[in-house]
Each structure stands twice: as C-alpha cells, then as structure tokens.
Image 1 (cartoon, rainbow, N blue to C red):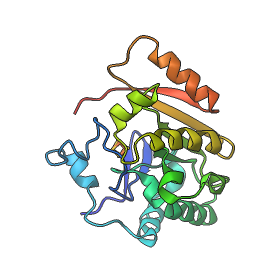
Image 2: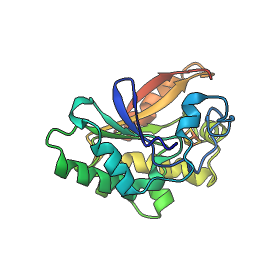
Image 3: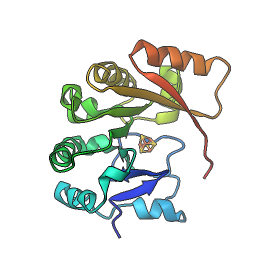
Length: 205
Ligand code: SF4
C-alpha cells in the first residue's frame, strides 16, 4: 500500500520520499520502522510520480485543510522539483488553496547542487527547518549528515536565503536532553537568520 497523503492534526501531509541524507538519532526510519502501523504505512515501496501525487491531492477537498505539509518519512527536498511543480499545479486548480509548508532538514540546495531558494517564492508559504542543536558539534551528533560539517553550513545558508523568499520560516528543536541556555542560543541563532524558533515536545516511540 502506498500512502501519499494523510491527515495529521487536522492538516494534510504529503509523503513523496523515504530518502534522506541524514541519520538522526531519533528518526523512525532506522529505529526499525517495522512494528509501527503509522510508520509502516509511510514506508514507500517506490516513490510516487508527481502525476500520481497530484491525482491523490486533487482527490482531496484541499480547501478544508488549514495547511498542506510536505513532510514524509524521509527528506522531502529530494523531491523539491516535484514539490514546486505540485504547488504550481494546485494553485492553478484550486482557488482557495491553504498555505503550503515543507518540513525539511534544510539541505535542499546541498542535495540539488544549486541555490533553490528563489524558486520557493510564491510557491511555498512556510518552512519548518530542523535545527536540532545550537552548535555545529551538537548538530552533527544528533543529525549525522552524510556530508558532515558542510551540511550544518548548508542548513544555515538555506535558512538565511529562504527567509528572503518564504513568508514564514521556522527552525525547530526537540525538547530533549537540552542543557541550560541551549534554547536561548537556538532562538538567537534562528533569529539571526531571519527565522523564528519553535520548540517541539519530545514524543517517545
Ligand atoms: S532529517 Fe528527518 S528523515 Fe532524515 S534522518 Fe533526520 S529525522 Fe529522519
């Protein structure tokens, strides 16, 4: 079974890929996706084509959701070109389209090998970028990106650039094992890049 779209907390979530360039310590992808009904459903045997995703989206009453969120059980930026295409297609077809958000690790430009941020303008309304830690060291420890330090720099640069084109840019950290002052440091860092900080509650699996 292939779940492309699903409802979560009232919003509509879109799952296009299971690929990722990171191995976050808390990620369900490698903590054994078997055994969790939620995760099993989101494990794609193959990635849907953009046409399949569009058909699935148009099968929903899109106007009734507060938000459409490209998220996935993987890093959606691997499908960034398709996400932008889907945004254009939905905007053409749906008069009152809800805001479109991408939940991302912020490595889109690194993955695609080009600065993709100008292409987000008018297509993406919000970004939620995983900051995961206030320093490079902490970030690398938690996120374990395949490109190492380059990924930290790329995530910061992506955030700074995206804030010029996307109305709402948030950075997130999970409220777990944080030391005193780390939330403040994260907030300062996020704000210095033109983003706001959102602290997410830790959900144990
Ligand atoms: S960036 Fe997201 S999908 Fe990738 S390993 Fe981390 S939590 Fe999992």
